Image (cartoon, rainbow, N blue to C red):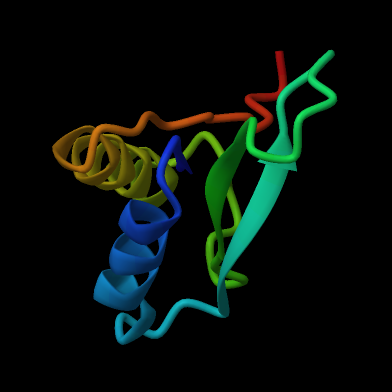
Length: 85
């Protein structure tokens, strides 16, 4: 999930941290072509080792949940799951 605001990213990370994910981290990501340190997006990176199929039902459900959660906090889901295509 990507957010323009660090506080929103940290709030979302806290909200899902207790859901037994393998890892939940907040990272800064500089915008491409920007030299200003202020021009960063904040990413909530979530890992769940028990999801075997990135195109399966569990992964799709998590993707939908994360997309809705990101939207609630003025962010978006950067869904780079491999679908095997």
